Amino acid sequence: HVIDQAVTIIRHRDIKCIFTTPRLLESLSLRMSLADAGIRGVFAGGTTMTPQYVKFIQEEVLEGKINYAPTYGNTLMGLAISKKRGPGEYSLTYYAPQPRAILRVVDPDDSTKIVDYGEYGRVELTTMTKEFFVPRFLERDEAIRRPECDEFPWDGVGDVRPFQSGTKAVIEGVY
Image 1 (cartoon, one colour):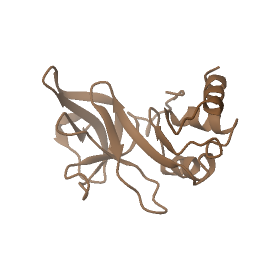
Image 2 (tube, helix red, strand yellow):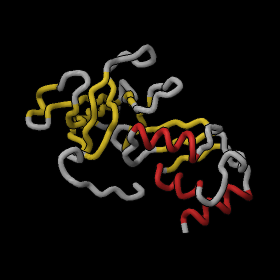
Image 3 (cartoon, helix red, strand yellow):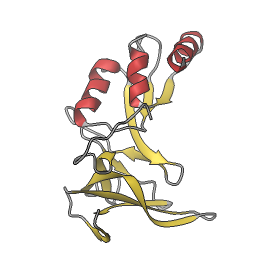
């Protein structure tokens, strides 16, 4: 019923941007052309997005016509946006919304050690605002540690997936 509601709203309102999970976005695209409906931008997050899946979303689901902004985050951190990708780049790297949140990729067996660049490890989040401080919270995700870039002068997390999904079967839903 969520897809039915979204289709109705998009068809009868002047909607230009949507925020959804990749799986719901895919289901929505089976019912309508989002580009033809006037959608110009999509924020998506909440489930794993492999490079192959990002390519599928951009080229097939969004028909290469809609700006796609993958996000990673939660209530503790807010949203980490993905680094701008060039043509043919589909691997995602996210950068935390510093200074309120810091992401590190740590050794799953010893969270005091940061993994080397290019290696998978467990995602660790530190959040600090005026009202709230959560130090070194181990997320339910793992990622590749990625270096800083021109846009973000701090480490990023790449190819995020559920923790230990590289070694055991993990079932993901729409969120």
